[in-house]
Length: 226
Length: 84
Image 1 (cartoon, rainbow over the protein chains, first blue to last red):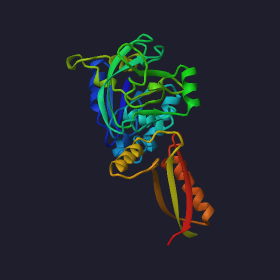
Image 2 (image 1 turned 45 degrees about the horizontal axis):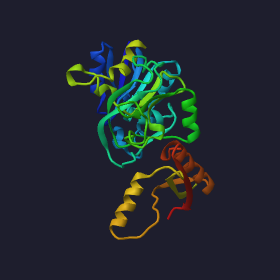
Image 3 (image 1 turned 90 degrees about the vertical axis):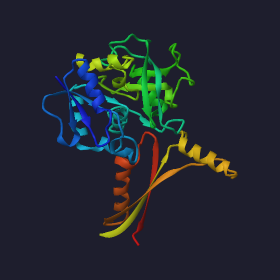
Image 4 (image 1 turned 120 degrees about the vertical axis):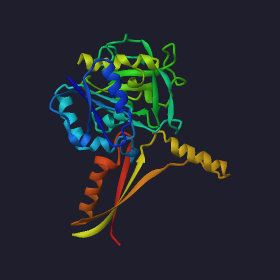
């Protein structure tokens, strides 16, 4: 069981992800994207950062790198893939999940703790939580506003593919509790197969007990249970 | 083969929020300008050789589909002229 954390030029949450997964006793390695994925890859994490300097659009360049073809093939075989922050932008740009993460409503980079309501606790990534549970994770992004045509969002909701929505501490989903203007307050979704997930908040930054809150461990535990 | 310049203009679909354009509009208003709305777009000028203008436009359109635009949020158009 080896989780490959794919490092692109400009990734900067790869080591945080490795540390968090190691703390959960998950066997993980950082892999340079040009080296391709090792044969014993059993899951893939696309970490946060600023791959290719966010040129053109955040995630646009990395999404079209050759390693993504490998990741798409593995995902089609049921291998779990989690994209966090820049990894989420890459996942959407690569068409692995619908929609796009684009410039925040504030037009600013935002780095803060947010509350999330667990919308679907019946996935690999959310099985550690209860549906409706409110968790707190950090966000750190300038392009995190989820955009999708109304019809696409309706399809996602109908198929229970929204993982998390931004909410207040009581779990109320409102515009006031929406940090970046995301449509439907969507913070994370799954692909057609729920083993592929993308989310803007950072579970790996809320995973080490010595550093504070650990609400993110539940998401990463998906790798241990895969 | 002839040399062409394809100009690909990528803009947000109608109705998609453009926070940078909003910020730019506010800055213009702070400078005392009167305006009703402001939209921004990205323009790419691509020099390429093709058998004719249609082929050049088709290739530039493919570039927009595959990379330059994100179909979820963008519309684009392509104009082709003979390279100077």
